Length: 102
Image (cartoon, rainbow, N blue to C red):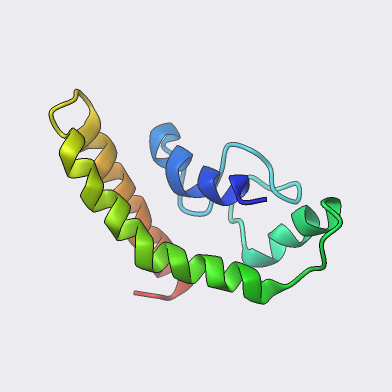
């Protein structure tokens, strides 16, 4: 169920996607993904739709993703890691602005 969220957060920086865009369609959309678009994912899995669960996941993203970015420092010696980290940081900031959390 969280694979689409992972796609938005990490794969987007590798593919050069815009905030709230993803490689795989969520509820038939690949761009401007919103929390309500996950409703179809819940329903396809036979789960009751509960937007508060996704809001909680978004709060975890806001709190924990900076720790992930910090952990990338230990890989800076590898080719391309610094560039990837900068892309992830930029995407994170853009996502916060998009969500109105800035």
